[in-house]
Amino acid sequence: MYLKYWGLRRFPFDNVADPSFFYLSESHEEALSRLIYASKMGKGGAMLTGDIGCGKTLISKVYSKKLIEEGSDVSLLSNPPLGPVEFLQEILYQLGISEVPDSRTKLLQILHKRMIHNMEQNKETVIIVDEAQILNEETFEEARLLLNFQSNNRFLLTLVLLGQTELKLKIRQIKQFDQRIPIKYHLPPFPFLGTIRYIMFREKKAGFARNVFTTKSIKTIYEYTRGSPREINSLCDLSLLIAFNKKKKFIDSGIIQSVIDELR
Image (cartoon, rainbow, N blue to C red; front, side, top):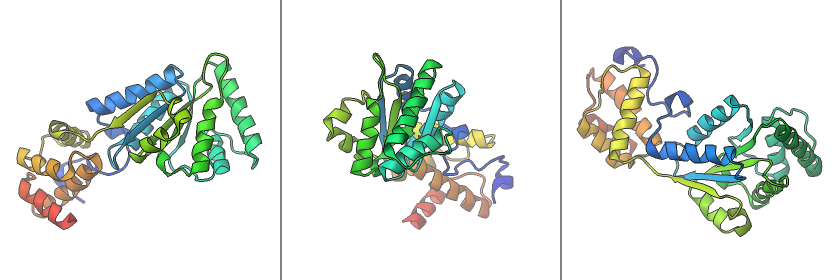
């Protein structure tokens, strides 16, 4: 609705995991570099955790895109099935194998054959499980057992788990799983300066010629969202709409506060 008014090409604060809007903050860069290190060096397991809306899913998309561009074989499970058999089937589907059996043993045989083939072709096999904290106990155990796929001197795959903070607790309670995941990182929210940079980055990507959020308004945004990217997006998007309706040229703290009052 407000694109023409603000002179924009795209909506700057949509809450979709669009890699073209990936803001490489220090913490996001650290998270991405650890995941890349885990797969490149054959570490077996990696885990990225963070609060709701902190950017884990977007990182997973950027990460998988980079892996695919570099020739890796990637299975990205955005909404992992709860059952262990369906979990294995979805892994194979995401690897491009359309005809999969219902037998767990046969599923594992197909996956093992694929991993051996990839190793012979010098290709990494990477399985990324987003929202891993929702997996039930049986499926969680199935994920752990995937790390038993090893040759004499390396893992045949890299298992990357992404999830909310509770995932750390689940992993910590299973010592043999915890030991197989040497690469871990918890994604923090943005600090105040990071919030300023994030907002300005998304403005520029969408087509703003200048920053339309005052420093005081961004401070109000930060105090309300505590640096959560998803909450920042929601607040800024509604603020742009309200400012458009009121024919304002800048977003001041009054507009931000009015949106916060509505959300509350």
